Image (tube, rainbow, N blue to C red):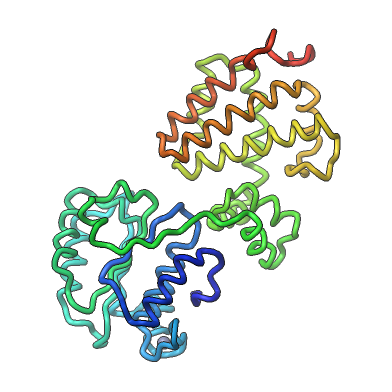
Length: 342
Ligand SMILES: [Zn+2]
């Protein structure tokens, strides 16, 4: 479990939490909003430990008292954690929150209730939770985390202090990864680039060994696009579609890949290639494509990324992108491929 000063990035969020803790100006409900994998839950646990600590230092928990050890061990009786079960937070879980927070704290201090992915509450659960928030029991602090605040009831939103979390700069993610045992600098740099600024995503890529696998899929997808008609384009889009973050990761991956193809085409400098471990594939794919086509595709992918960041539906963004990608480059005679295409 991390102390505040061990959490990287998110300085705005951390400053706000540390300040309110140092002054003991604690709200009864916080909403930690931001993309997944950027440290919301890590911060929520650190904040909960600080709130429950029996001998807090100026701006953080002591890490040693009984209460701190209980939070660490996951058995603090006044720390209630709620997360989606089977995809949603259900009415029974909301009723359990209601029951627990009306009891006096077991250890005489505060009670803290952490609700992870709060936007996954069913309508019934959200309405039940709203009633709790409308008359918040004294000494109870709610910490909600969410990726999509617009999916919460406006009345819940307005009763929480919002704490915003952001994607980290790629260089910062690389720094975090390079400190892990057994991770080489080159691997850290590449993973950070592919993570799009989400440490959680980067860990997943590293742990699952899925880094090479997902890029193998990218390489195959890029070849498949070239011969795809509209039906096949939609099928390809469907095979990659997932959550907003997953979709963003694929789009960023495609962008980096086409970037590599273009860089190789224009410079033949291996050092400038990001997907360096796929160098042979990059060289071979670049040799079959013209620079104008690659530039056109990069433009279309960037457009898709912008649409996604403006909250468009992820599946729809991918469908439109792949339909655009399988069309010939704009303003070009022919299809922009070299003669050796087939
Ligand atoms: Zn403590």
